[in-house]
Each structure stands twice: as structure tokens, then as C-alpha cells.
Image (tube, rainbow, N blue to C red; front, side, top):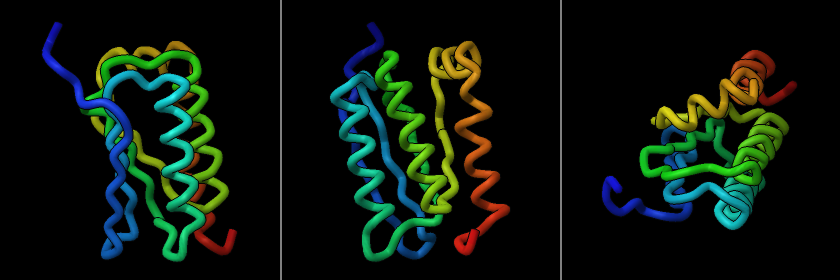
Amino acid sequence: MSGPHRTGVRPSADPRTATLTVRVGGELDDACGAELIAVVVAHLTGPAPPCAVRLDFRDLAGVDRLGLAALLMVRRHSSAAHAVLHLDNRPPFLERLLHRTDVLGHLTAAGAEAERSGPGG
């Protein structure tokens, strides 16, 4: 084993850049996925919603099918709020999963779509 992984979801909002960064650590499963969705939705529907949502996976240890579903829900909410979604520091196992399930383009296309349409749609 490669050492302890930080677990859970740790959000950090930067009002200067209108960016929400969420570090996702440990296992992205049902519990962590639900927490991730709740955190992102709370920020997107708050008084100063971000224009960009960055998910940082540097501490990610694993992901299951419910974690993958959570990523799709985050994409859905981000896209609806016209926020660009970024998937940062993807470990090789996540990269393989996203390609194997053919959702990487879907997740990252949401950001490009939001950039083109802007807040007014």
C-alpha cells in the first residue's frame, strides 16, 4: 500500500476567481459521492455561485459505480448552472475508468458547452 490517503470531500471557494475547488480523497463511493454532490450543489445554488468547478483527485484511492454516477450528477448540476467542470489530477485508474466507460468526453464537454453558452444560455 502506498500510504494513507486523505478521505472525504474538502471544498475551497475562491471568490476572486469565482472557482470552487473540491478535493476528493479516499474512495469515491456512495457516501463520498453523495457528499460531493451536496457540496457542489450548495455552492452552485448559493449567493455567489462559481463559474468553474474543479474536482481535484490527487488523494483519490478508488472509485466505484456509484462514485462514477456522482461525477455524472456533478456534471449535470454544473452544466445547469453554466459552470465549467474541470477534472484535475486524475490518477491512472480513474483515467482508465473514464475512458473505458466512455464518459470522459461527456464530463469534460460540459465545461466547453458552459464556456460557449455563458450564464445567459
